[in-house]
Length: 289
Image (tube, rainbow, N blue to C red; front, side):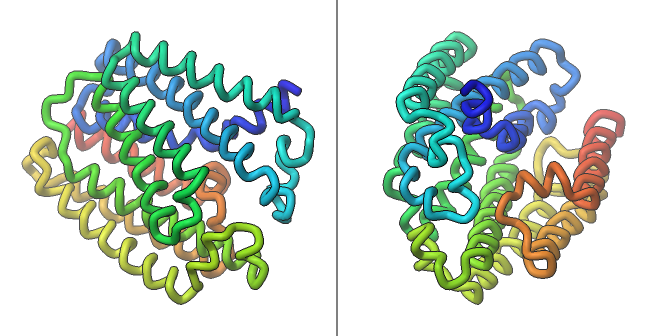
């Protein structure tokens, strides 16, 4: 049962919470021990609050998931994890994480609470509304970045990163919807109601718009943000971002993957190499230039 609960908590999804470290890295505090430890603690708490969201989401979707070709194998719809245990675990996670989060920083606890409430609304209502469903997913990533800001004393964190994060999350969200629509084809609506509001050509247009604007917004950040080096060396990171976006598009259109972006981050070697090179370049530019 413990293994089933852990599976329901989606540890693989915790990779999304690395965006909490954005403020730490881009405000040049990565090597300040106190700031790093506070952000690391915030990362752990956000992983737990996001896991509670996944538990409640599975409880809300239990009947629909039983009709899905893949989701029916999840612990709650398959019966491996009893509904009562799932409810208890979700409630305990929320109480414990918010209490510890308040002790760490009241503002951080407030952001976590907002994230939880927004995602509850998403699970209950908003995930059935086309476009709004992806906007809510995007808001979740922005809140992760905001949560990181509340944990440390930020001096020159650029608002451009919020813009980039919003666009990048929209790109991934629409890509995920396209992959789901491709997987389920004509029966898509019977498994996820919101897919009735999308078509593959429409999603391709959305993806084209947000992918292009993401590249433009990130490029603008690299030479116009107040905290980047004056020699514009941050622009050296642009090719890695462009490649990562193009690689994701390749996976969506050619390999028909993308339904689980976190799986791409954990398994796709070219994408991983691009991200590692991007991260190393950012550290060199910010801390050694």
